[in-house]
Image 1 (cartoon, rainbow, N blue to C red):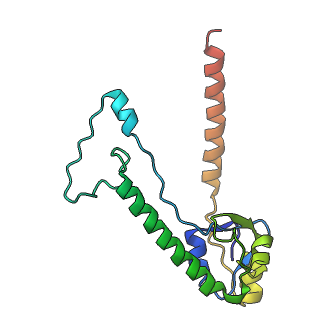
Image 2: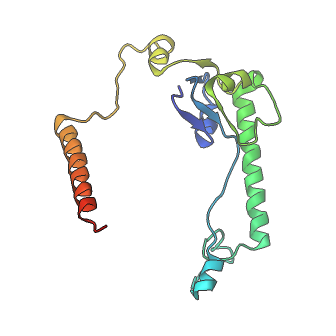
Image 3: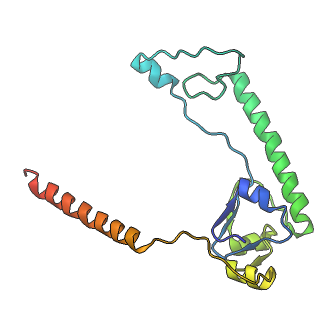
Length: 177
């Protein structure tokens, strides 16, 4: 049962389920693979910062944000992502089978709302957690494991918010204009 988001790695796992239930506003899909990060090499050069990385293995600094990314490493990363994406697509096709409605954008990394995901065959039906537990699984007892604030925590949170507003107002009032 998906209440909110079942995308990327979570969807990869979910396709092994017999049925996938979603809320109409759930976000489903993101069948794609990403490696992301930052490159600080140019900034370090402008600031006169020297990178000192002592490694064994010529690719140990692969994807390190403080080291340049060579064309060879970029090509390796792209090939790896392509292979993983193909594995992901195969898992979706295997898990969803004939329910899947193939379209050019299906494996592009996009996400869809719950109803659209059912139309595409990425999910099976609309249903809430309570519905799935009670009517599909036939659970005798439904236990809510959502952490609940006790009285002391609620008072402390409200007191903290009030104290923060008071201090903030005092600081603003004390600021010379």
